[in-house]
Length: 537
Image (cartoon, rainbow, N blue to C red; front, top):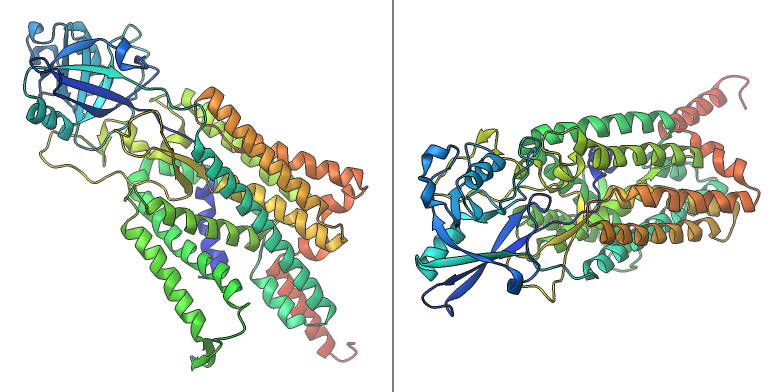
């Protein structure tokens, strides 16, 4: 399978929104010795529980450890054992809401649910628990054991959630990655267009045909099929995430290795030394390109092995992701502005529906898009299709889809108790507007318009990203970035075409671009045969 084939197989998984997560802190201290204290990470649902923003304004409660009890029935514990206490119970056998409702009715002041399968935001349908008010949070079972070992049995706990800084420096990194990748991918596509035009003018038809065969023309029919497949695959991921996530990881590993090779090979070929070749399989290969291929495969393999290493694996994922996006923008060509409008318009509706509308459809009240981006099974009481039981072993971390840029959020005013939180940006929010940017640059090359379309479209993309970050900061919830990126790129491009009186040409594109590479090859072969026939030219 060629690079274009692998990229087409992976494209449906690119449409993930810019998102961020929620966590809090459990402060525990020994009643006999207040200097003996320690902080632990908790996860809570802010729509269920409002925690104080500082330790000084929080109230404490005596901790009662009821593990390994599950507390799915009021008969499991005596009433007075929970009265005005902060109780810890095990996760499993019933929902978070059922546990919280039982604990509240038994007089508990705080409910902590110990988890052996990782921390995630408690979720569920609150329609039948409208009067639920008890603070409920998820805590690691290992931390529960550590509290007893480190602080003893006479312990009080307090829950609070320090506010995140208003300005998130990870947004700057994501902004630079997105804008530079889009601009570089669009520039690369335009330069390829210029080379093809020069080759065509020099009658180097074989080279032109070869380069066209490496490209994929995304016509309206393919766009509609792609959007339908994207919807189907997203829903399948929502229900069968635990199996399909490994398919996506495998596809990303292969596609990113190929993409990294294609990106670096362009730079290596610019070097005019070290071009020794070896013969094999009826052809010759440059030794340096063989080593480059090995390096790219090794890079992808290292990421696969260490993908769950939070401290540094995100750097490899972002490097591979940048190469993936660049190669995609260069390889996948939009034939005209009409196709760009159809693609971005349909995917805008797709993005908004799966982020904003699906919470009203799903039982958990969560967005399908966000649950898939963060791992849908982490938000439920089920793991690998079975109810979670209280076992003595910690499970492996939840696998996450690799089709996002991940940048750790720097927290200067809050302790890093919960590890390194990440801001995420889906590849689709880079690639899809990038296809329009690439078309604008190719159109600039075709019309010798001094990159005016390319520049305005890049500036529009940057403005759209800034608008996305602004709304994300103000609303503090996941955002479909295409909602802001699509109008900010389509409108400036259309205005430039209207101002230059080139709208018809910009809308329809050039004839040879509209033709699919397969059709191009067939047409060229037919032309060759016709010339060979008697009476042919």
